Amino acid sequence: MKKIFVIGGVVGLILIQAGLCLTAEPTRIRVLMMASAAGKGLPEMVADFESKNPNIKVEEITYSPEKDYETKSELELAAGGGTYDVVWVTGGAYQRWVHHGWIMDLLPFIHDPKLTDAASFNFEDFIGGAIRFFTVEGKLYALPILHSTQVLFYRKDIFEKFGIAAPPDTWDELMEIAKKIHTPEVGAIGMRGSRERGGVMWTFPQVLYTFGGKVVKDFPNDMHPVFDSPEAIKAAEYYAELLQKYGYKGTLSAHYKDISAAMQQGKMAMLIDGYPGVGPYEDPTKSVVAGKLGFYFVPGGPAGRWPAFNAHGLTIPVGSKNKEAAWEFIKWALSTERQLRGALEQNEIALTRKSALLHPEYLKKYNYGGGQLMRIVAEQLDKYVQSFYRELTPEYGDVEDICGIAMSKVLAGEESAEKALKEANQQLYEVYKEAGYYKE
Image 1 (cartoon, rainbow, N blue to C red):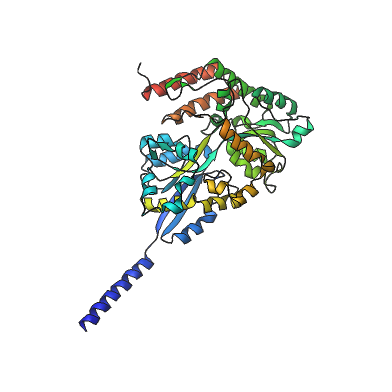
Image 2 (cartoon, rainbow, N blue to C red):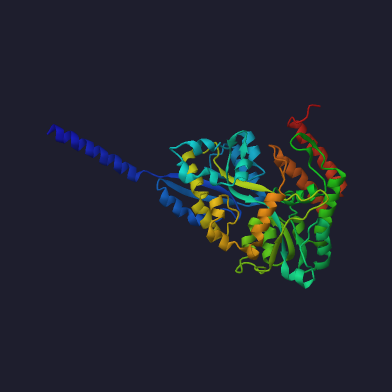
């Protein structure tokens, strides 16, 4: 009887423990995302994650507009970062977040066999350049959810109407085409003009650098600002003339959401912006320009071509109370399976895994312009993307704010390019001086 009692007690204990496991509350996580073409389908797909991870519940996925995402997310992170377990980190902010100690190094999660099966995770499958982008002093602070470069989108029907045989190779050629095709109904060009982060300073550097201008003298070796050089002033004057005279109505203050909607509505003949936004433009249910677009390199200037490059990622705040559950979500969200589904169902084009980018279904769907878009993107990334596009240091947010405000004054006609850029240059000097870049 004693043996039977003991066995029964053990069985009873096992059953009680099993019952506790079955009724235990799942770990609840919250996710903060920037509103973007990448990852927009996650809410519709989260049931898949929860079915594969029944012990984790995604309580909320919050999307914040790009133009004020950094400000909102940094208020949260500076306060301790405990509200969200997974956060989107922008290419312009990650070094600042690393500097402040707000986000985790993800390599320990990747290399812990209890948390990550190396074979199924396949770390080497991520695009190498995007991984290097988020690596600081041997630590990896995010995994990429999006990579981007900008291209020239142009209306083939309008070019044909005006007898324009080919897209422009240089900024001078683009200006001449703009003069020819601009009308009050359909502006010749759209480019970002907003002073907000991710606005004008996401597109203007492509003109600045190709005119021979710079923000600092020799990044990262000499951080003395030269934003008021003759070349920089000339670039700002060009940008302002192009958008003031030939931009679609609204471009002088436009951010991504504005410019994307205007393109879909047929309000411009040319657009220079990130190629990942192409999905809605080519969706006939959303866009009047679907099937009418051609694609080409961003124009060059006296100093050659200098197209934009950027990456965005997912990471874990230091203040998260559910880091292992957050890691499970990141693994799922950035898996080949989930990325491919996002591409096929939600027009997520800028995937960050090679296996997804080379998948036959992906290549079949994103055959824009008979494959012209992806050929242009691949060649531009290979030939023309430079060693840096933005001077990314922990101070970059302040730098972008200063330059963005200066450019918005020029675009609005409030100040001359020379006056606005000289004022900005002095402010940049003070920012870098306070940060300790100068010995004098």
